[in-house]
Image (cartoon, rainbow, N blue to C red; front, side, top):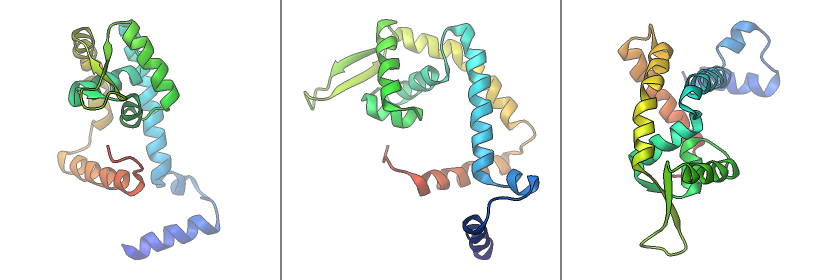
Length: 163
């Protein structure tokens, strides 16, 4: 296995991928393709709820973590900080989230989900479940567990934020 890693690393440094088979076996390409298609499908399906995938991710993250800063939300929602900040402004105006001053650090502004945001998350969640079921269709539980473990390790390999 180590030889395969060395071969891939050496090939990548020497020349670009040369065949469709190489492209379809290249993990960064596969991850990008899955993420892009996922976002397109999710955004299309979530439009009927009046939200997009980043709003759903933000509501999900806040439902789990309860209270985070805009920067922390940007990291976990996989979005640019400036876009996240504008989105949070819109979500505050819509009553989906609220801002408050941290009890432990008066300089910190935390964002928390509101009951209206929780309600929307629960209404939109079946859309995500349907898309997820389509994504993993035909993948057995063992392969899915291995895939999750491998992707988790890859995230650790490139992690910049410890959230």
